[in-house]
Image (tube, rainbow, N blue to C red; front, side, top):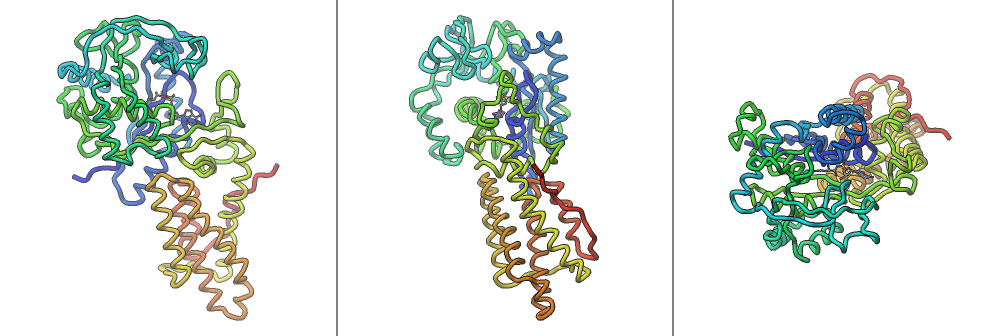
Amino acid sequence: MAKKYYITTPIYYLNADPHIGHAYTTIAADVMARYKRACGEDVFFLTGTDEHGANIAKSAANAGLTPREWTDKMAVKFKTLWEALNIKYDGFIRTTDPRHERVVQEIFEILLKKGDIYKGTYSGKYCMSCEAYFDDGELLPGDCCPVHKRPVELLEEETYFFKLSAYGDRLLKFYEQNPDFLSPKSRGAEITSFVKAGLRDLSVTRTKVKWGVPVLSDPGHTIYVWFDALVNYISAIGLGEKLGLKEYADDKINFDEVWPADVHLIGKEIFRFHAVIWPAVLMAAGIALPAKCFAHGWWTIEGEKMSKSLGNFIDPRDITQKYGVDPLRYFLLKEVPFGGDGDFSIDSFKKRFNADLANDLGNLLSRTLNMAAKTGDIPADYKPQGAFADKVAQTEARYSANMDALTFDKALEAAWALISGMNKYIDESKPWILSKTEPEKARTILLELIYGLQKAAVWVQPFMPSVAAEMQNRLKPGPIGKYAPLFPRIEG
Ligand code: MSP
């Protein structure tokens, strides 16, 4: 049984429409999944929606719908967007799927029996929007939530606690023994020092929140949304069947073939949930830990934080309908080193489109095909020799190493160094002149260019699947045709 490559995105809250930030994580996961598939690995790519909690119930009520009607409607919006962005996931989990709910209940009961979950009372300052308690030290002046900048509420409730405090040392040891778990390194230090400062037990049930998964043995409590949500990563891949739950009897996914995850891709604001709470829950449940948690940065829009009230929400379709899906996918992963923060502006999108896609890649393809049109063919099975072959091999090695490390911008940089290098090669060697004096040499250059472009098509494939297919089609051995530019320049 070969272990699959398992990659996940966060499951998205359904209280608002999907925007470019959600698209970013999902595209990155899709790129990685496509890359791994191209490397011959069996991949399981999971995404989905986080559907419980007071916020979702509130959004539903505002829209005059039941939570169920609301989440059914909103989940479709995410699925439709993923289809439009050419996202090829293998699983889509909704936390309102009864099979997921059963696994959440089961894990909860397992931890309760082991004593890792116990009953107590909690009083603290709670942000309704985050659905989280905050310490005084974390709050802004006026007891405001650091995320929503609105006053938190004082809550006291009977609650079940997860014994997170007992896991600090084990977590630190785990980070030490698995130095790639906290990625990128620049963001890992914050997690380690948070754990070193000492962990407190975590309240994992609510009595006030009705729209949630009831505790099996105490249904007056619903399970905290984050506990519920994190379990998606294992409920979606056949854990229910493994636990012997009858709802899962027909599940086709073999848990042990998929778990542990190779990488949980997330945004930086939910790193603690994934790097502290999640591994501790898994340790308590006796389940293996994921190999890596990668926290990427945040996009601002034209220098501003994206928010409903500012009205600067970017629906990815505003861009894709005008300029195509692939250029957006490319832009998001090239513009900003994966892991860092970035700013999205139409101006920088247009600049990069014209420079990298229209000028570098598009021109290289049409110049090469125009030359090939004169000789009338693209031969099969050509293998370059010497300096050019070395350059391609070096590019390939740089590309793969960076893809494996999720440094997408550097992988693309490697590919583009060869692409612009080939344009320069044409400028300098002038094959159209050379063909008159040294036709053999001119022919070799052309064959090298075709070969380099065929390679480039493979490298860009995870990022721009339709563009790559079109390139491969135009570069197929045999007679060649006349084509429209791959990327018509954006004017203005
Ligand atoms: N439901 C939780 C996650 C549970 S995972 C077990 C959640 N959902 S969310 O809808 O708020 O989505 C958060 C994710 O969307 C972030 O982690 C990040 O991946 C992505 N982004 C949302 N806004 C973003 C930006 N402005 N920029 C980049 N990514 C952002 O949190």
